[in-house]
Length: 196
Ligand SMILES: [Fe+2]
Ligand SMILES: [Fe+2]
Image 1 (spheres, rainbow, N blue to C red):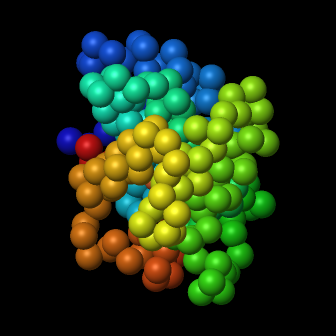
Image 2: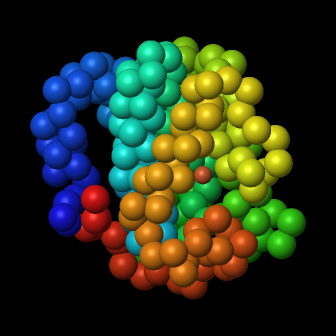
């Protein structure tokens, strides 16, 4: 199924737990800074779309196994909230050129650094929701690539949900690029349509 950002929310609305999930994440979803993630590319997807799916998946797992669903929903939504886009997008470049990252050395590759950056960046934009479980879940969601595992169950859920959603939405051949082990080429079109 191909959907855009607005249709994604309508798609999730079909779930009977949608209202609970939305009550936890709506302030972030509506914030100007998070809106910019519609222009951050995540493989053939947007970071906005990817993070909404990871948030919802994390929330649903948490509800199923009776752990903190609010922490999982928020950490899932913010797990890739790194400050600067690592892939070129013309529309992002025109609107927010300061949001584009300059070229990285191999030791600064996205896959190894973005989780820590996101764990710090969310605290700048959403100080009211700072929580050690959210911070740790975001910081360690790339385990085992980044060696240190999540400290709390909510972090394990977000890390697993991230991988499940990624597997569902990408071509396996592109994994090295996706996790930042290989440089991405320029992407000149805004990604408007997504597969779920
Ligand atoms: Fe990530
Ligand atoms: Fe992710």
